Length: 152
Image (tube, one colour):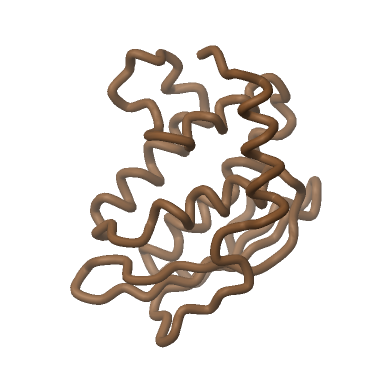
């Protein structure tokens, strides 16, 4: 998959500087999960308010590198309005994407919209866990798992 390096870098930097719903705790959040990447110190809590099976609000808090913050911000931005099945499918698709299971730009499973830009992380394999952390945490939040998510 070919990624426009300038667009990738600009998007990552924009989301890192101005993350969507960062330090935002949805009122009456009812799904939440925490996770971390021990190798680089990224750690986030994802907070969701789900009503009638639909994500009404989503936010996150924590600290991380530019890649992990941008990935989390981009994820949070697309979640609101998705039902739980759609959000779970998106999380699974993104986890497969970061594991190299989705590689063709013609593949119907390629991440939608700006999320495909996260494929730029493949130029830096050591950063894949940074980009993937949010998606593991989202999956845990949707399932209401109480265990801490860890990339190791």
